[in-house]
Length: 254
Image (cartoon, rainbow, N blue to C red):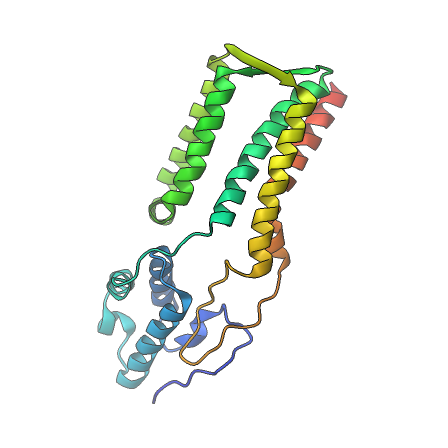
């Protein structure tokens, strides 16, 4: 008996509904591999419908009929390239990260009554390394996500080493190269945070980041702005504000 797919579904993100006869672990592994390869949600839904139809009619498991889910997902994704990343979203992430670093660098001396921010060689090197790390996350999203999924401890070690290098550069390369008013540094940092958050928030409000997994004949549900999406767009300003507040409390108590 062939499984019927409804035209519309109130939970379009619940892709397990497209393959209720298939082992959930198999579906999860298949969808994850397809997502990592940038396959559009509609194509993933079509593939799940094919698997569900075969499993329901043959009585065989997906593992017996299609083999390893990740291998089958790679085969099914062969004609598709990686999904394009939104330039506005990428730019927002990079600007937000830089804004956080610049803001915190200016706030620290300001809280201690200093009027000038000393820019050292190590501080500039940290900015360069941090920007390079953000660029790597954007340009090599698939292999990095695959590393996090397959070898989380290795990924955690690489992240720890990256931050250790950034801190070591800031601490050891203390040769001053310039000085700027702390107010100017904070203003520039807040400006970068605002522009970055605005770019990310625009993408969230437009719904361009959504790619729901839909079955054959299903239509894209009406886009709605969620609190989680807004929170994601405002994450850098929120983290920065929390760190500034913490620095202020430590200074006041000291």
